[in-house]
Image 1 (tube, one colour):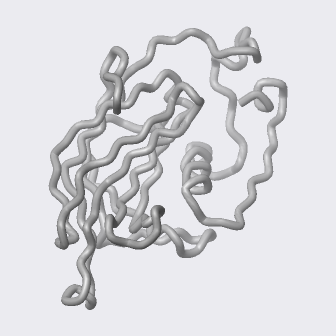
Image 2 (cartoon, one colour):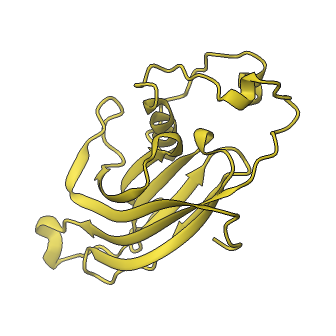
Length: 196
């Protein structure tokens, strides 16, 4: 943000790894049809001081995760996924948070119906990353699928997010039609409860 506030309008990204940082950037730039250029928010062009952010009342983004599903495929008899959903809010340092659901045991289908509150002051700079993970995979970054949603263009409502496969092609991310998360997104006034 500092470089942006003093006039930088072009940035180069290191695309060697197809990981969460790239997913978030891709979602952020999707607002401008992936052209790589984003207009500054109004508060950055009207008397913005580069030493600090303007004072703004925080809002609560309530995300209710209803369910998630992973197609088990041909290996269903040998191994079943233990899925859970992780929500990550990425934006300015004041707009960051993480929340996780409980996991399902050996079914590939998660039903939770649980709400999570995330505090957001600058939604025009934030992205919500929805990750479907497996508890029993050996790596801590055991992502089965993901969806990244820029908050600036997000309309409140209920969604069935068909997830992208995490580690395929950078040029053509592939959605997996049998892997999804159902959730509801709504905005509320006031600061989110601590401990999200």
